[in-house]
Length: 409
Image 1 (tube, rainbow, N blue to C red):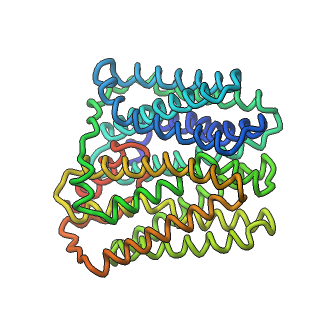
Image 2: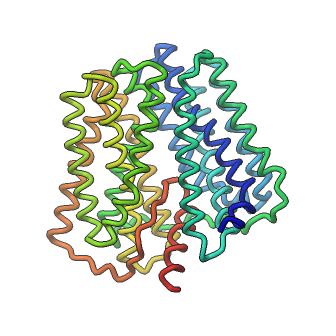
């Protein structure tokens, strides 16, 4: 495996650099909008437009890669991401920002697809699970580092330039690689009704999980600012939430391998509701209390996507790609809606994210309990849990195929 990792160094190094820049711009853009005194509702629309672009990217980029190749598409997408970020720093207009963030979401979906398809192509069957774990750790740590860079006292102009520089530098390692290009990226192909029929809990869970995490990714800095955190503290606020989600993925996944995954989904939802209630009533006591609350909320909500995906695949003979694409699209729809709801409530309360989390996950818990009560599952196609980020359907194939091959051997 060390030799394999060394052969993939340029790919993983590119991913790390550009995701530090991506992590920085995720927090920087809403903070800059706040400095312009824009209303939370406007920032919510801008956040939702990012996820609209992401969905469009998942649907369209595979055809583009098939026509012109991975490296050319990767270079173009980095250029578009950088240009849209810099233009946001130059033009203070709401409609322009929505278009720019939609373009950023479209480009980032494509960037993830290129990296993940290359990862899939270069990884051997016996090491695929380990390589996937390394990739996920690198991506999460890189995004965390990007969040912390917001605390640098170099002004918004300097931060925009730093984020743009990191995005552009992400081209260099992969642009100079001599590795052969991977196979074409498979296009998204699924039926909502067919996937929903085989696993209603997975689709409903993916939607409400996306609603909560989408609200966090798009408006976390705005929520933190509403709770009187400084720029440096906002970066910590974002980072500890991501770290919480990372820390609980493995133990939650192992637990779900031993018992009905729907019980784990219910348990996480109920605990997240309790955490949200605590945050609503005691959340403004101190920054440390807010950090602890967000660490817990991240740990309880981030694993929901992987759990729902694993549960859906346990109970169907549909292809991995079809199920994965359906769950991803449902999660993305929730991510589009989440920022709109959170931004609307932010006009009335600083606890908007916790209110949305509490209500959404209460609904999910009730629905899951209902399904447990009246619908048994056989887990005829059970595979061990694998932690997967909600990036593209390609990483679904990488992760779940690795588990299938491990089980087969």
